[in-house]
Length: 258
Ligand SMILES: NC(=O)c1ccc[n+]([C@@H]2O[C@H](COP(=O)([O-])OP(=O)(O)OC[C@H]3O[C@@H](n4cnc5c(N)ncnc54)[C@H](O)[C@@H]3O)[C@@H](O)[C@H]2O)c1
Image 1 (tube, rainbow, N blue to C red):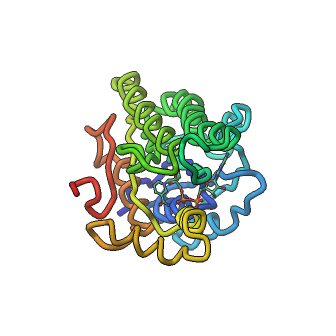
Image 2 (image 1 turned 135 degrees about the vertical axis):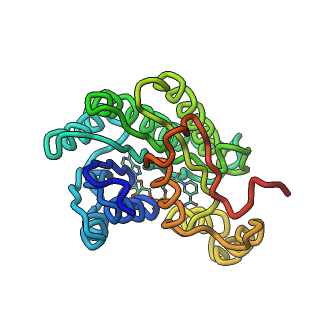
Image 3 (image 1 turned 180 degrees about the vertical axis):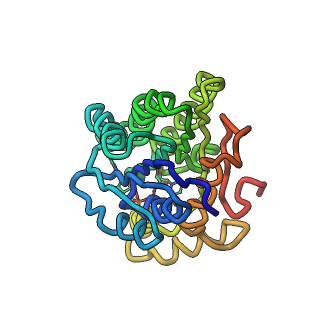
């Protein structure tokens, strides 16, 4: 498939598990990729993955919570490639793991800043560039924690419910503009984020936590980053031309019932 030939796709959180897989996927389908992550993060692997998939990629360091840096990554796409067709608004953090009454304020604020403000700023600055180029598609990374409550990670769950709200509201506002906005809602995926949560919850018994969490999923396994990237690529492509404002679980059956 070459659904993104001649198109420019921005991927935030590109140094992480899902972001890296998305860089590879978009590049493999012809996109020029703008790989965004914290300035302090090495984006070399994301660029290498895009290039070995046959594409071109530009690494841009940015903190998605800072409006000048978000404006900067959109400007970098415009300056280097002249257009923005896709934004995979994917950067996110898990925060820490405590009951709500014990949750540290600073951790709460950081989770909301990255996961909510960062997604909102991405939409805010990418949409005018997309409209200038005739339209585009935004895919936000929410979570199954944005569809259901989650013990121990209440700010994360709240932030992902907010991503759902931003997704639906943006889709309504942009429905006739040529810009579609959807979200993916993954269950546990094999990335650093789950390793961090497993360790937070289980300490030395992190492997047991991992086993328990996997067994809760109907599919009896975590998802793989490339599986999320495939859904994001579909939603960002013209094949999804009548889909906007929708939230897509990708969860091995988790949201189908208990
Ligand atoms: N892994 C899972 O189980 C899972 C499940 C559901 C949703 N998600 C979501 O998927 C997205 C990607 O997560 P992942 O699993 O690849 O985790 P990850 O930790 O591997 O990747 C997240 C990336 O976001 C980057 N990032 C964090 N704060 C940033 C900031 N302020 N500015 C720019 N970049 C920043 C990190 O540096 C990291 O590279 C996140 O939004 C996460 O909440 C993950």
